Every structure is written in C-alpha cells, then in structure tokens.
Image (cartoon, rainbow, N blue to C red; front, top):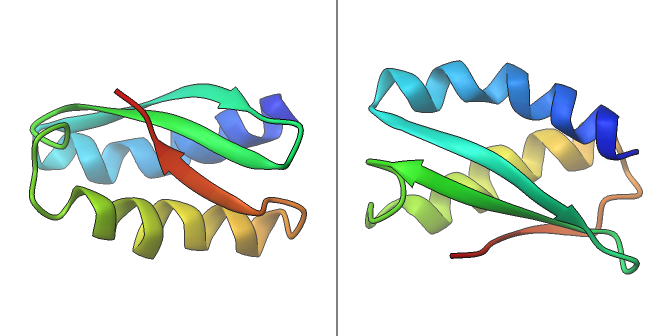
Length: 74
C-alpha cells in the first residue's frame, strides 16, 4: 500500500512544485492515516491545510478507499 501511496504522491507533486512547494511521504499508519510533510513554499503556506484535505486527501481517498485520511507532520 505504501508504494501505491508514494506513486499517487508522485502524480500530485508537479502541481505543488509549480508553486515552489513539494510533498514527502512520511508514514502509512495502522489506522490507515497517510502522514506527509509539506516542503518549500507549501510548508508555511496559510492554504497548506486546504491543500492537504482538498487535494491530497481527496485524490488518495478516491484512488484508495481504505485511506482514512491525510495528515501533515513537521
């Protein structure tokens, strides 16, 4: 499952990089939470939570219904 998530993040990454940011996979927990780390401009962006929930989480949950959610970590 981790590899599938990493592959999906690779598809999302160019959109974040276009705005000077990036995303890093950190962990897929036992309770099906994907933990990611935002980097670059995305790390301190006021819209970071919206990006996580509205873009990353939406795409991952649509692709893999077993994903319960996405959380950003520092």
